[in-house]
Amino acid sequence: MGKPYIFINTYDAAVELLDKRGYNYSSKPHNTLIALGGWTKIGSLLPYSDEHRKMRQYLHRFFGKSAVEDFHELQTQVTHRLLLGLLRRPDRLDDLIRHSTGETIMMVAYGYEVSEENDEYIKLADEGIKGFAEAEGFSFVNMVPWLRFIPEWVPGTGFHKRIRDGLQLTHEMVYKPYEMTKKKIFDGTAIPSMTSKLIETNATEDGNINDEFIIATSTSIAYLGGADTVATSDSFCVKEDDVYDGQFIPAGTTMLANIWAMQRDPVEYPEPEKFIPERWIQSEGKKLPRDVRRTVFGFGRRICSGRHFAENSIYVIIASILATFDIEKALDENGVPITPPLRYTPSFIRHSEPFKCKITPRSNKTASLIQQAVEFSK
Ligand code: HEM
Image 1: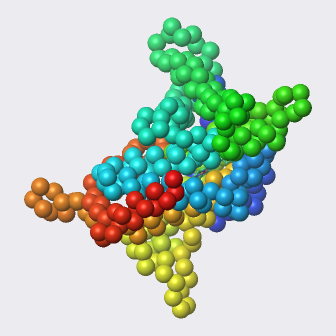
Image 2: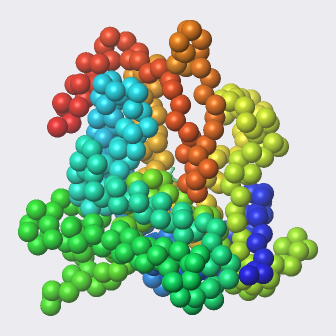
Image 3: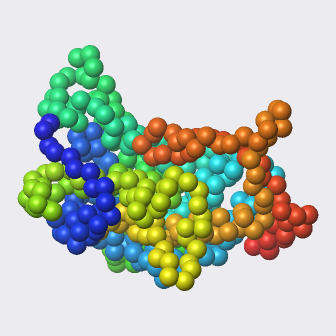
């Protein structure tokens, strides 16, 4: 209790502190439930350390700017299947997009083809993300860590179960898909993937695998990042006392980069809540607003390792849907267009609340074009 929190609300402060003074702002804040539940084994929550640096090197090998070009074809094929899904079930846009992102990342990370419905690994990732949000959320034991020594029979100590469940879940998320891939390598049935390639390059002559934990944790964060674009809280722990803009920042302070506020900066983006796509159109003498990619993926030494990959997926999905479908407001029973309420789930990882819309092929040719694209990529 009593450790200060500071919200970084401006882009300039985030760049100065998290990028330029990154050496001092790269560790993750301590959270009792996160630590005891084993969540710090998950790549993005690893403390800043040699293990963390190695994880980033491994991820960079596969998700660096030029490395991600290898995935263009896969991303395009998966998007074609998404379009076919939309043609058949336009009411399932949300599920289809989630399925597509899971499908791509599971192939890249483990060479694994996800099943159409209720895939066990996607379910595991969903449970993991939920478990993480609960562990990270409000709990007295996070504020008063010695409470963890109170025995389980005392009422109000439900955190003991959370810790046990967390340990099992984090272990399964890191090792279950990893072991599945390893077994396939030995059976000779593995499809090349990040895991299979890292195992092959780290295998020793006596049959052991170096860095097994780091390989497993690096791929697990790719899997979690991809399955739900999980942005773990963009928070950092200050290593040494510092001063910024005349303000003293004591060691141990938790710094939170308030990306939400940076993206609603009215100087960069006048009327930020309004849909004004023209703000992005270049014209003579006009300064474009700050590219959101500079903030949305975080900052400094913990900037998102999957950003180039994620951007490519988002680009091909959006461009393909817009090229083939018209998206309009749905009509209510009186034929009046329904404006979506723009509400988000109150959960830790925010999604827009489900809303209705009307998705129809742009022309008669669209359906056959999509069918052909899917057939062609088989
Ligand atoms: C639109 C999609 C995505 C967004 C908006 C996003 C955003 C972020 C943000 C803000 C962070 C920093 C969190 C922090 O400081 O703790 C982060 C970290 C991370 N992301 Fe992403 N991400 C996305 C997709 C992905 C994907 C697809 C992958 C998988 C390849 C991925 C892998 C990672 C990893 C490994 C980290 C941890 C980096 C570290 O701690 O060193 N992300 N992401």
